[in-house]
Amino acid sequence: MKLKKVLILVENLSVPFDRRVWLEAKALKENGFTVSVICPRFKREKSFEKLEGVNIYRYSLAPATKGALSYMLEFSYCLIMTFLLSAHVLVRHDFDIIHACNPPDTFFIIGIFYKVFGKKFYYDQHDLCPEVYLSKYKEKRKDFLYRTLLFLEYLTYKTADRVIVTNNSYRDNAISRGRVRPDKIFVVRTGPDKKRFKNSSFTGDGLKAGRKFLVSYLGVMAPQDGVDFLLRAIDVLINQYDRHDVTFRIIGSGDSLDDLKNLKEDLRLGAEVIFTGRVSDEELFNYLAASDVCVAPDPKNPLNDKSTMNKILEYMAMAKPIVSFDLKESRYSAGDAALYAAPNDVKDFADKIAELLKDPEQRCRMGKIGYERLKGELTWDYNKERLANVYS
Image (cartoon, rainbow, N blue to C red; front, top):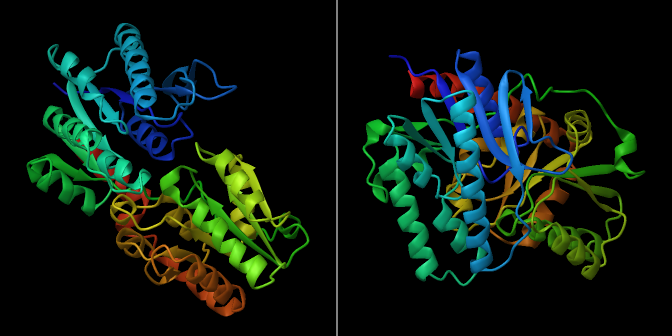
C-alpha cells in the first residue's frame, strides 16, 4: 500500500516562514501527498489555514526563555501542544508518515507513540543540536546537558525509519555518531527555488539611504549566527576606516535582536546600520537586488563549520558577491562566488567587504559565478526529486 498522507512537525519556526519546510511541504503536495504541518504561531498568524493545498496548524508560542530549565519547560510545552494537534490532524486528515524536523530532538517521543499504530517516522535533521549547545556556550563545555542532547539525538536516529540530512557533513555524523545505516540516510539540500528568487535588475538607489553602497545580511539572529561579528566588522569600517558611504541592512529577526540593537548603540553605529525586521518577499528581492555585497558572518564553531548556510545560496540566486568566514560547507556552496575571511577575524571580514566595494568588476564576476553554480545538487529542483525518492 502506498503511503500518501504526511504530517510535518516543526518547532523552530513558523510555516511558511521556515523556507526549507515550506519547500518540502509544497514538493510533497506536488507529488500527490496530503500534507499537514504543525508549527508555532507568530503574531498575526492564524491558528489554522490552508495555503497552496497544505493544511497548517499553529499553536501559540511559549514565552521567550533563557537558561537550561526555561528551555526544558519551553520544549515540553511545544511537545505537548504538537502532540495534541497531531491527534486532531489524525482525526481530521489522517497521516501515514510523520516527517519530524529538528531542533529540538524530542519529536521521537511522538514518533514512538504513533509507530505502535503502524505510522512511519522520518527524521529531517536541520541542525546538530549538541553542536548548537557547544556553539552557544563559548566555553565548549561537554557537561550533562551536552550528553543529554547527544542521547536525544541518538534516540531520534534510532526511532527513524529514514533520516534526511542537509549535506554530507551531517550524513557523516549520522553514520559515525548515530550509527545509522548508510542506506537509511538521504541528503536533501535546501537549494533556493529560482522561481522565488528572481535575478532582478532592480537598482533600488533609495534603499541605500543616500549612500553609495549597500551591504546586506539576510537570516536568523541567534547567538550562533554571528551578527555580532558583523556589527564589529562594521565598527572597523565606520569608526576605524572612516567609511560613511555604505548602508548596512540587516534583514530578519531572532532571539538576539534586542542584544544586537544594544551592541549597535555600544559601538556608536548610527544611521548607517538599519535593522529591517522580517520583510515580504517583494521587499527581500528589492533589498538583495540593490545590494553591492551580501554577507554571511557565521563564525567558525562546532555547528557552523558543518552546516549549509541557506543565506549563501539565496545570495547566489540573486547573483550577489559574498563575504563569509572560511567554513567548510560555505566553501562547498559558494566556491569562487565568495571572499573568505580568516575564521572569526572581524578586521579581515571588514577588509574583505572593503576589497569588494572598491572593485565593481570583481563584484560582477563573482555574482555571475555564484548564479552559474546554482545547478545540479545546489538547486531545489534537483533536491525535491531527491525528497520524492525518500518517499518512493
